[in-house]
Image 1 (cartoon, rainbow, N blue to C red):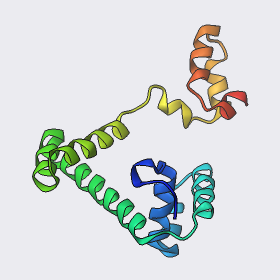
Image 2: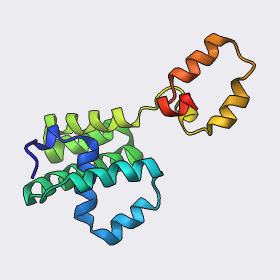
Image 3: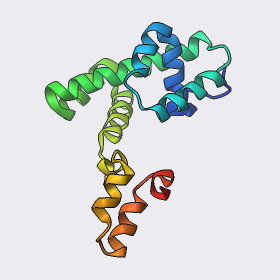
Image 4: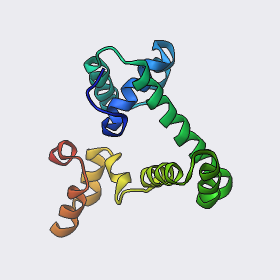
Length: 148
């Protein structure tokens, strides 16, 4: 399929393989919960996929399962509990890798709520602010949204 190994696949490529593996019925239900730009990006990645090799599909599905297990353990018993259970099930290094991936994806980026705000509402909110404050806020926006 791709000349890249699992560790080299981008998140979008993994998501595309995952969605293809789920089938069109389930994937279409997932798309209903995504933003239009996310749908476009994933559709682009799906279109770029050649034939998905069974071993690539299995690796992506296994990674998804591992992340879901880790997330469940974290929710029920915290990060230390998750690490301990994963170490027993998968070994120390694999557990560390999964927990690190999961915790980095759970971290909130500063001003993340601003990215989801409508630009016209944001404009009304920052109109009377100092130029430095406006510059700081615009720096955290997506370039297209900041330009509007």
